[in-house]
Length: 209
Ligand SMILES: O=C(CO)[C@H](O)[C@H](O)COP(=O)(O)O
Image: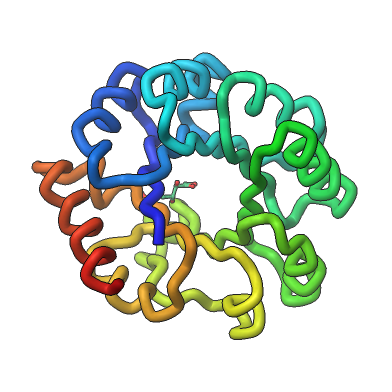
């Protein structure tokens, strides 16, 4: 199980400094959507330069114009880029095709995806499907990701990530589904001692093995 550190709503320098503090306890580093929107590809480029050996995820949440956006991400150092699962099938296919060309990976964000759409998306078995509780749902209705609400066949046969307000407590429940990636933002970045919390997550995962 990989820990993906999500870096949102901060400057590029603050994001790099946060990642430096916790780098020994995280596996993947996400340049959050908010950083990409505020600072553009510079945020992805600088993160890869700072952490050439880490898997860098560009959370660009592509909805259209996939070839252009995914090429931008991969040319600027991303190893994984994200697309919304609600996007047209042609967009998802374009993401998969660009990722294959650059030998990189696609993460499909399942926010608001219907059951029917989920079946279609599960056929992209090389992509990582991300079960996601949105920031707005977290803030407005107190929801968080504590149970991966996907059909067991998908959990078993697809590459799975989970995101959205994950804490050490919810990790304990999520771990039973063994997602490939757990995406953790605020629980680490807003902690008084981010290093300590990141280590707690990593230690928890290590003792599962
Ligand atoms: O994609 C995101 C927001 O859209 C974040 O990466 C994700 O929600 C993880 O952050 P947090 O743990 O703070 O919810």
